[in-house]
Image (cartoon, rainbow, N blue to C red; front, side, top):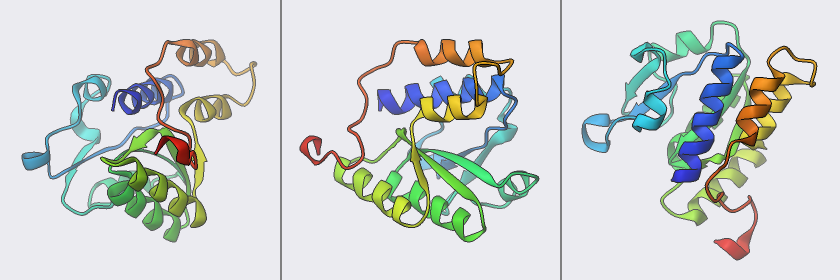
Length: 170
């Protein structure tokens, strides 16, 4: 979990620097708890947080904000084999290009995580890392926010999750 939280924090910070909206869902927070404070504290306000009981994040209210003018979505979160997968599949059905951040998604069991990432990729999602996303959004060192993004990429990180398809670590 420390790697997922760290990578998610890094992306939230990068998206703020790049003025990209962040939307958050919480699966039945009354029983399962709210967004971890490390992420919640980075959000400008709570209007971007949506409670849900549906496994996919595409719930009433959030879908309107999402569909405003974007056709690409970067997904992070847990449980990869339930909420993240169902969200990715639903987004792709709706015509979105989906980027699943492998260092920012996890499941209670690594086998479920690996299978979920494989399923999403087979269905057309792109497996990416948080650093890949940040630098792809900059496109070059000439981007006005490159130094800020580069500084985020250089921050120390906890041990990473095993790579996709690395069966020796499952």
